[in-house]
Length: 167
Ligand code: ASP
Image (tube, rainbow, N blue to C red; front, side, top):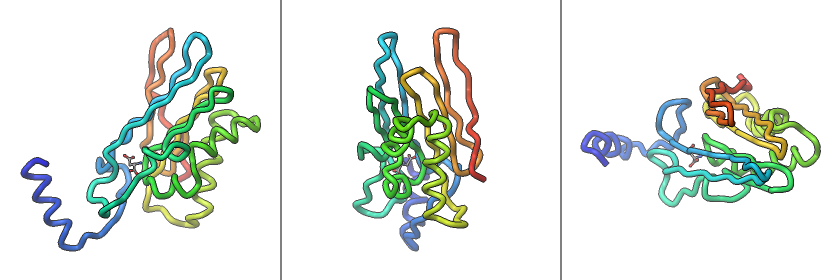
């Protein structure tokens, strides 16, 4: 910790209120999905989790199926945001299963967020972003609130792709 983050942490400990503000930099998951020239899919994610988390908390990123899932027969998915909500729906696994059933990566990401929102009716105080790729190299993404983007690379170059959102 730097001196200033240590000070913020000491202040936070007075109330120890566990909350997950939207689109401020209190979390930092990086999720990556790749399709190589042989058509093989790989994925990875890394996170330091939420700032000021409760003691012993495990987020979604280290749980295969929650923060990341790849099935080389179908596609891959990865998540960022409030891990508790991703774990409750085993979100990345769900998205790959939806693609297996015929949904596009975009449709599958939208359904993944819809499942989470169904369990959180009317709740607006958290962000989730999903990213997916299928065996054909089609990609999709979707999030709860605007602000989630991903960088898409192919042989022609790369571009920033803003996600559509539930709200
Ligand atoms: N998904 C991570 C977690 O819940 C947070 C993040 O997006 O970095 O731990």
